[in-house]
Image (cartoon, protein in one colour):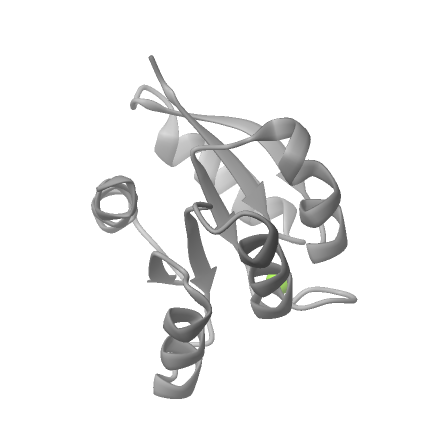
Length: 120
Ligand SMILES: [Mg+2]
């Protein structure tokens, strides 16, 4: 059975890139959220195996949204996908409980590896 992915990103381009990269893999995008607020609202219903989370978005940022989702659902598997490739950001993501971090721009091999690790 394919693993269900919820994509949280305000960029349409990133959504298209993720669709392309995941096509033909064991991962299927089942929900797309444009904001952290949207992700929080949809998480319960979607119950994804993995959430990919952008950081810079309108309104709530991806770190705050992840923190809130993990407070409610400690078993949520959240992978940050962001261009904020700084030690502070990595540390904060880890402290919150994110399962991984993928730098933008990303490629398939790197993404699938982080997904695999997140599911362990
Ligand atoms: Mg963004």
